[in-house]
Image (tube, rainbow, N blue to C red; front, side):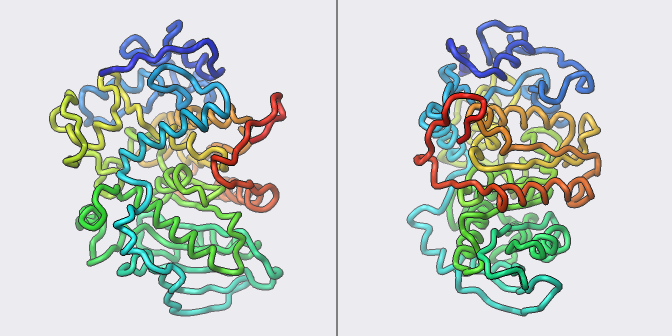
Length: 445
């Protein structure tokens, strides 16, 4: 059933903006009542954009008008209460979002019974070692699972002091070329005092020859049960982080991740669910969950497949009962997935996140972030503002088109990593250790 969400006496400034946009007094998410004819994006300042992305052409009727509705603030719970303080966010609202997304993803890491498939990640296969200008290039295999050796490049700074150095995990896009990130980002980083580990997603080449076109999702389910491929990717990054922590050259407190397109999508989930990573760059992931890209695909969220333990028998669309779709669409009377990527952006806090959009001059762009992506960024940013750390989240906008590098793209991620992994590294020791910042405009978390 639809949940009507009422505002309490105290609510966040951006929730007020959403109310003003809806023309609704006292109600933030109220089903069809907050439907609106959105103003032209060109006429709406980016910081005020709040609505869902226009849906794909072939979408069920329940989603056709989603772009006329505002995203629900990640600060607002089902009971209508907004998290009004950092403590309220960390102790009440954030755990609830983690619970909801864990149900969607299946699990955030291997269950106890799954541990038999994971061995010593430091037992790597060294294939070649080459000296490059400013760094050493090691081609190696890392045992992501006991029977799955994944290809990687390890780039170690040379002639830049003893370290330890910050490290960045860099994944390629849809190609199976795990060396591509060396050219895109890795060589620059390694020559400037970063350890770099490049790789690719397992969906390109997995156990038994499975890949995104050959039942790669089912290969995961057969071994691990309900563990969506996107969540498996996050754990693979965590295995890579565990490997880096075994290296004496690496400062384990300063780990970053960068990805583009496919791995830009991965980056959103890494930012939310891999606390080892304190600085994440997502280049052109197309952040809208149900917009103009393919998060529905079996190798991402697989949201059309039924799982027997998902009991959503009352979902109005019979073909989506028991599916991930029915969990994302928590309120089917209201267009738009209530569980959406602005929540993942919020879950990254207090760690640093850079989103880079590459088609920000366009109203909509296939597989590329566009003007409508601002809504999702703005929604996630509310949490950073509540915590007093708005400087840790950034949206770099370009019109470069869907690509991994350009002068503006490169300047953005280079500045970001130099700030958050070198100049001002984030000291993160777990959410339970966080304290409320002092009151005032200069407060920090």
